[in-house]
Image (cartoon, rainbow, N blue to C red; front, side):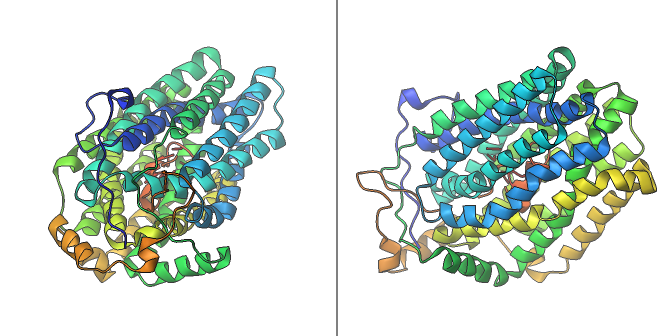
Length: 494
């Protein structure tokens, strides 16, 4: 396995964000800046899209169909996106995906501002956005952590999440207010502009001095290899299976039921934006906690925190008043960030660098695979059982599947390896021809080998959930999770 590159110095011109840590390279700063801008726009766009459907005669079923339309192509193309990201220069894949998202959101904004969007048109544009995310998320998760050394991997992801979730606070609160004051069309236009700016920042990445990757086999061989890697790790596939349920419940609650509860009981989009902002505040606090706290049993600490994701569905089922809902969202945001950092640190520790994007794609695919079904059935479930009963059922499901994961021995016992142990392991492994690799492109710039970043979420047991409130449901993970994206969530944030 290739060792992580040395951290290059960061010129003053690259200081797009204030007071970044000394280990934060120019590339890390650019990626974090781009994720901040994208997350700022995407959180407002999430609210805007739901209310655009409702304001033009749609109901809960229509909101669910638009959300499902975004997720279906995301599922269809994720594995291809992961394999492509392990074969082509990742920064180019990310820029192309950002531009596709920019164009689709701009067209969505024009339709809404013109006052005559049809349901099929909104579904088509949402599907284009999901296609862009399918290629963006695995590439982003392979890029972010390659910009720092392994000793700072956990801190790097925590700093990334602090920055991106700071945008969540402003984006959700400002987005809800803007939807109420100037309408959803202009909020969608702002999101399109954010994608354009982010694409420009990611185009400035300097790839000199980054690890090289060996050319892979054919696309299907790469996908089969990723599948074997996933099945060989019980901790990986069990948590991905868990999050296939968790993300589906979170996606239905936040994409469909949340806006409806806000409209019927809380007074409109502004209180719902305030609740999402409280979730963002919680994630920032959680990321700050994880910058200092490094639990020895990574997956155990992370999994225990997932129980709190049942709380938002329960709060919407009651429903709690705006302040109570915001408090619940804050707690769940803090706890899921604990999981997100623990998950991405585990991935970075346990998965070979050159296979990271493929594994990330399987992570995202498994995590969000049930989201289209959940969002499409949210309306019918409300009609059949009542909104409150549907939400309570989702909360119970989250508790049950999270408890089941604790029966997997590796989830309870996997421990963090100290940096010196990893350094000794890397130093004692002779470099093979495959490790040496070949440059991905001619010239001085070589593409890195490989996390869930967030839109997303960057991604993503972590990516999909951490970004659940931002994109699909969401690189988590951006993390663009993001995360990711971690994204996933997540995820989910590009």
